[in-house]
Image 1 (spheres, rainbow, N blue to C red):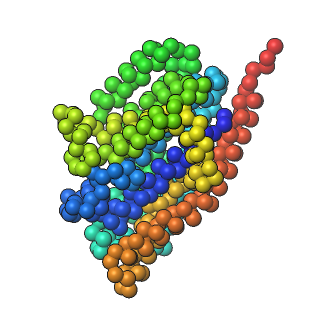
Image 2 (cartoon, helix red, strand yellow):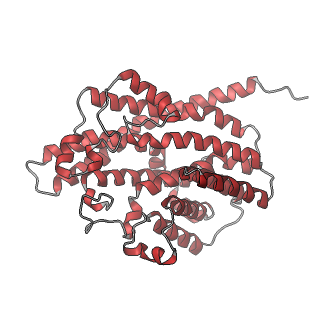
Image 3 (cartoon, rainbow, N blue to C red):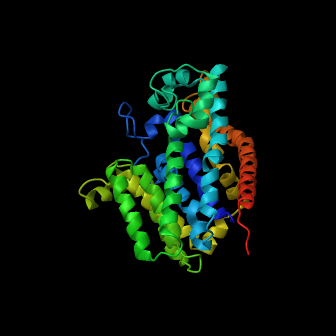
Length: 387
């Protein structure tokens, strides 16, 4: 399967959005508008700029994109073993990077390199004071506990107290298998009504289980099943309008403020953020996938680089923020006037996270190559002879 470089770039941009979101929560908490204890007159929520750093909306995009890319080749090529191969390698493919980042966090705890509690006293960030909401009370730092969390517990129990970003891993694993199962049931040759019906039924079931994040994966599968294989092209102006709509909706946060006030007029009650962000993800993926000029613009070396480091960047930036970022803030605090210590901490977090992501990405790429080889060799051994 050939990877879509433009979608990889979008994944990288979404990872950067999460990084900016958490940097804001840690060092500019009053700009987020989500903390009742802090003033909101300077909050970015309600402005168009909010879409660039609404990290939770970016998570919704990750999930929709996973449902799409994990099943897209199956619907396009009709390759029967594709879903099985992806399912076999899905957990180990996610587990190694997660293990590495959890052990990194354990080492930062073990050697007392985290400075988030000290920094939070000055930034007044409730999020930072509780280790990025990873825990309510301190826990006992233990190597075997960290190893167990990275390998199993974050995926099957949802533990994430070594890195709060890991809360998404359980959704990612379960949602991936949900996507594989849905794609298999739908099949590559089902008619449009059958595809719509099956996804609608699953979406309604998910809605009433209150696990709304899982609705993103069936939507991604539906796009993979319905989207033409680039034989249809959207005019440039339609794609640009679609991208504009996607960015607008990605900034939505159920706050009746600024540019989002019209949504409160249009609806009797504010719609769920997850549903709005899902629509935004669909609009963005469709607008990019069906326009060759936009895909070419996004398929640059810089975009490809950020796509390459996107998963490691998502995983490592909270430990880097709480160690390097906070240490930079505390170091510059005595001799730089406000808000320059906060700015220096934000820059150190962004640069440090990108730098640390590079070796993680290299290891991740090698691990994926090993898994692909292992799965291919296993499939070849069990393949029936053809007469």
